[in-house]
Image (tube, helix red, strand yellow):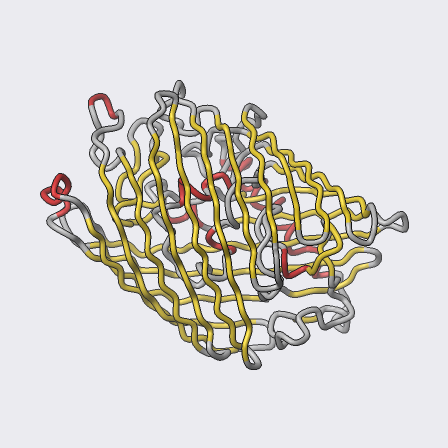
Length: 436
């Protein structure tokens, strides 16, 4: 899509999919279930208590078909329209990023997501679920926002983005799933998206409880969850109680620099993921992906990925929770060159008003000093640590306004010290509106 009318048509169509169903829900049946006490996470007659994919709690579902601990929270505005159960959710951030050093920059931008879902259960035990998610990220510009040590994708189709986080596409998900209840313990499901998320890695960072309150993308993003937006994905999965195995065919190349359009779909890559929730507080996964030409600027370079993660979430008090994620990722190219990444992040919400979050990361990267003709350069190990806080105020029964900030320190080796001016730091201040 290149013309303005086509872009506006896409915007209008996705927005209608997300929000119009709520215009037809009677006021009495549109309920907010985003802040129920943890002792009753599925309260409300209009909110299904089980996942649309199988006989497990709705709180276990995260992004795509990924799992999180059963003790996770579940937000959203829920309602009923005929045979359809509806859900809507929105998070919008206005952020100012200030990154120091010669490669740093300052910028104010808008980020976030708006999501809607419609679900119908049939008499034969099958369930159809439709989901759409859009983002205002393209409004920040093709170069995204300044974030030291981040690399990947491109703003112009010619040069890679360095020390900047790329914007997500406007259309983040447009998916459908259909599940069959095989027994009280077993289910089989298919999931398809244009775009969608294949079966790889932990839940995407903006959907992890340990990360969702931070406006800053992790620098491990391209090791762990950059496949959360691919233009073409199909997944088949089987789950039994607390164990699940699934496989996907998907488009290996990440989205191009045109953030308002729909990329040409392909199914040229594959992945497999095993997930296990041994208790209500834990969620474990291991996954593998074989991706064709994931980087647009390197169309002849394929890549395999390996990921493993553990998420622990516990609830306490009326509104309190604490969630922690430990994750490992490895990327290996056609020349058997491997690059590893580690992530440890945590967030604690002692009450309804405050959330404190922190993240530590370490990556091996050859993208920070490009080689000849824009190719990869020398391999360096860099690390980053950040801590932040947000204060929330309920402005209505379904809307929360928040004010927050974070501070980050970056560590680079001697070979990068000159271009970064030593070990630079950075920070963000932000305001947030959450609906549902």
